[in-house]
Image 1 (cartoon, rainbow, N blue to C red):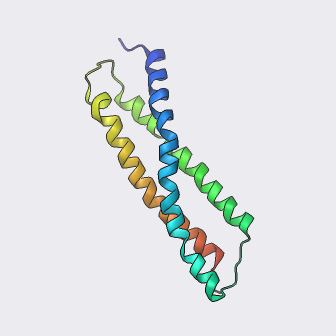
Image 2: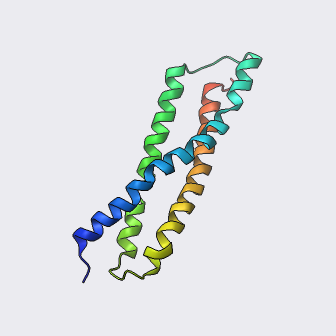
Length: 123
């Protein structure tokens, strides 16, 4: 029988140790998506948002990314097992962590691009 208390602590330990790496992996694509605004500013486009607005949107995006990261706990709920040799514990967690980072990087790039568009939108 599965000891839910120890399993819960093990799952929390596993995923929370990796949250920082997840967040750090999302920074470069978000900035790369936002980078065209540096070129737009150099050409003289009018800026609609201030620095505080841009930072606020990036912080809001980071909060959203961390809410999405918490979806890993739903995977733990579906694939939980007390077998120490299970596929989930051996490679499933690692696979979903890497897949989640890659998916999150794509969303971070799109989010950075959208922040750029909101900052320098054409009217």
